[in-house]
Image (cartoon, rainbow, N blue to C red; front, side):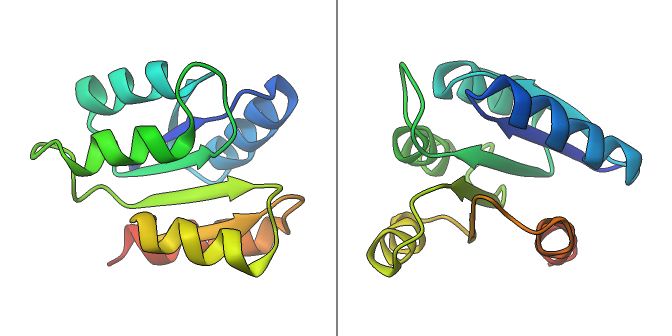
Length: 121
């Protein structure tokens, strides 16, 4: 069973996406901010990380930077989920090292297809 770390400060989105992923057969681990997400990424070594960008304590970019600098987890695919949906932000996220970028609100099919594509690389 593939393990996905979901990092999201909005409790409703966190619960809904986690439930969707579990119904699709994934094991999910959740974190409410980037610091908790980074800690779980290091200890749990997920197969993929889904992360919001704007979060308290440590944002998605800061967490991504820390992950990419940690040899043990640096190759973990990271998909950003964000309400920042203008082209410049998307390009910035990908240039910063994210593997994909999904804009909120997102289509369930898009989310699942993107997750599956990056787990099968």
